[in-house]
Image 1 (cartoon, rainbow, N blue to C red):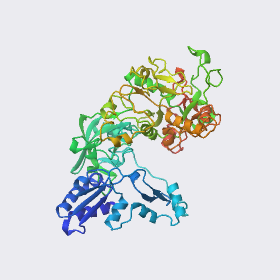
Image 2 (cartoon, rainbow, N blue to C red):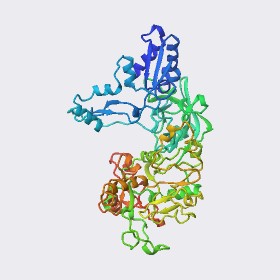
Image 3 (cartoon, one colour):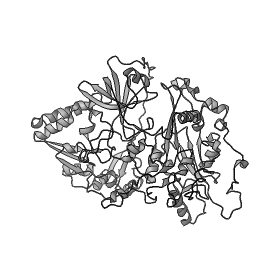
Image 4 (cartoon, rainbow, N blue to C red):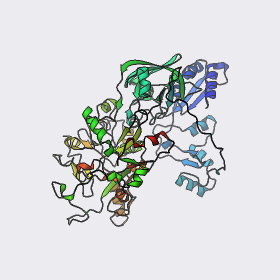
Length: 632
């Protein structure tokens, strides 16, 4: 519904018996929480009910709107029911249930059918809207879409647009601050707020977890007397909210940006539930919004409150002190290598310009090459990975896919503040250049599976060992939790289980929680070290399938996709066998842009990065700042 329709609906509900409605059916929505505050929709609902109206809510959760409804009906999850829809190009899509409904829920289709006295099941309704031919219908179920159902493309022409005219972008509005509202990058408008995975996933830019904050530039914060990590009050007329401040490099002056979706009071046991006295996660800023400009509020007064607020930010973990931070900044050009197109064209191997390589005789012991050395057992594979920083956007899809695949627990805000997050893939974000207009660099870092792994050299019980195929394995039932390996890892990608995060999994009534775990990956107990395994369970699955098909024991390239590789929207991650000369990962390792992180330590990692190549348009401000970081 558009803004005017929402306003008309709220006004009509306030009329009660004098209005046009007697019943209000709310399908899979939460207007009591996420509508702009000036609509005062909760008051409209209560006034409607008080005048004899009936409010019926269909939803997955007993959320804020369910608390103001006469009837709350459980909705079936998308995996539990039949559905249909259309893609962006008009292609008809079909969805079918993967499991039986866990809680006897009903889909929106079934609810509407019941309301209109349509006794057909959801499957029958979807079937009626699909192809009439039975064979075509079965093909649509198999493919998930109806072939040839896309809308015909239209031939359009556009007039030339005039050049944009910009005013003084650094000027602060005279009547106050401009506040921009945006959906949270992970929990959206709040509908996924009760998912601990998403709450603990660091924001790609702020690296903030379990919270939202008022982002502003350093100049704006200085003019307002606001300090990073302190509370501020944002007021617009009689409406106000209090949120912590986050000083963000590169943020525009004279405005504030806040993510929506936080501050839920009836989301669940993760994000906030009044009945259990669980404090809301983050801050609800919807009261500051107006229905006619829901994504923007102008003329907002900002009042610094001075009260500190703990922000769970992961970017500065492992930075022990100021000297360590300075050392990391000095080492940054060797961690995230990048260059301009001109630099790359002049020297294609610029990423290898540093003293990255040691000689074969530089080690304390002799290395064995499985391809050439005469050994009792010659491995058939040599697993490796490559990540192209030119296409990596820092979206963190790889981090959350790894968490889902490998049963990685959620530790909570307090533990994240202590540096105890459990993600096996850390998405680093760096700024370079002028803080007012910096360049941003992202780099996913997981276990590098080093050939000369420093973690293996210090483990007293051989819990971390090297496999014949080059994997840095963890033997959990040997680990005694000394954490020597974590201390000796220069990449800081090993995680320690301080607490038993799965202690409730075996309790009666937690069958659904067990269903969330991947049965092919062990659930780790307290007191063991864990880290990236290159999705060894997928490697073994492919190995077994290859043998069962009576093929050659070498697994074909592309058969195995790690979870991070499978989820990467830009295809930045490739994985495969380095012994296969035609494999994608072999070609990536041979690319002139490839380099090893901290190669000067002679760890010889199996995970290489491809240096980022920047090519900004000459008219963009980034082009002028291209020389801020150089790796020539």
